[in-house]
Amino acid sequence: MNPYAKLTFLMSLVLGTTITASSNHWVSAWAGLEINTLAIIPLISKSHHPRAIEAAIKYFLVQAAASTLLLFSSMINAWHTGQWDITQLNHPTSSLLLTTAIAMKLGLVPFHFWFPEV
Image 1: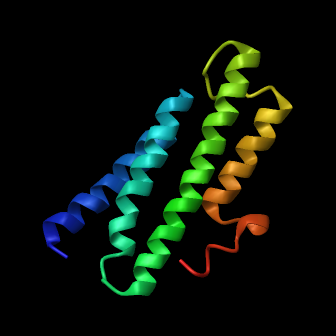
Image 2: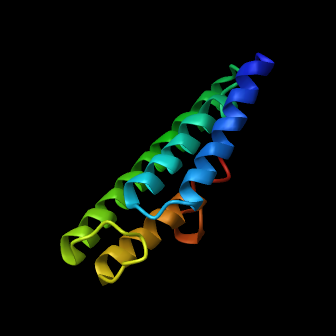
């Protein structure tokens, strides 16, 4: 892999993490998580081996499903509270969906089956 491309992907990881950690709005937090997802996929599949490509596809599918749950959770919360602020997570359904989405993204215990293969 070209060193400039690798540097770009690593800087995108730092940018996505910074955006996610410093956001007060659900959409900006989601955008930071998506930047991280799109930056890590080329790093996973940089060796053109079928196992690396399979791992990148599994990673993408799990992260896309978790991002969908995160957006759905934020929409339910915005519907019930009337605002998109992260600190106003009051509805129990949106709290449960957000916890599920974060557990999927991190590969925590009930959703950890994809993690060792990637």
